[in-house]
Length: 126
Image (cartoon, rainbow, N blue to C red; front, side, top):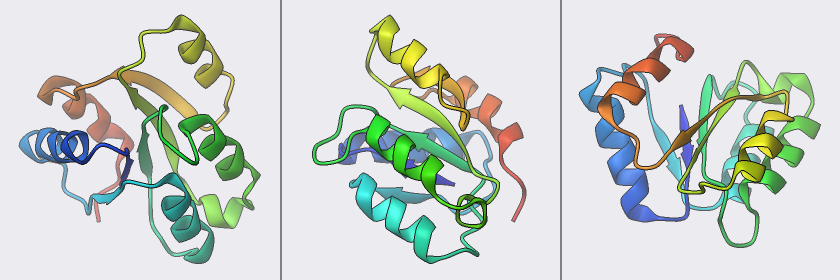
C-alpha cells in the first residue's frame, strides 16, 4: 500500500488508522508524488494494491499523479487502485476524481478507523 501526501502528520495519522484496523501489509509513505510514481515505474514487482492519494500537493498534485499513473504501462501499474484521501470538500474534485478509471473512491481526511477498515478489502495479504 502507498500513501502519498505532502503533510507528514497526515501520513502518520493515516498509518495509525490503518494499523489500528489491522491492515496486514507494508505501508509505504511518500511526501512527493513524483517519488511514488518513479518507484511504481521503476519496480514492476512493487506489489502495490492500494494508493491513498492526496489532491493538493506542491510540484505534482494528485490529479497530475493520476494522469501520469494511468499513462504507465499495465505492467508498471500492476493491480493498484487509487482512493483519493483529501481534505477538499469541493464537489468538482470528487467528480474530477471519479472520471479516472483507476480511482475507486474519495475519502475525507483524516482517515478514521472505520473508514480504514473498509479499505482493507482492497488490499491483498502479503
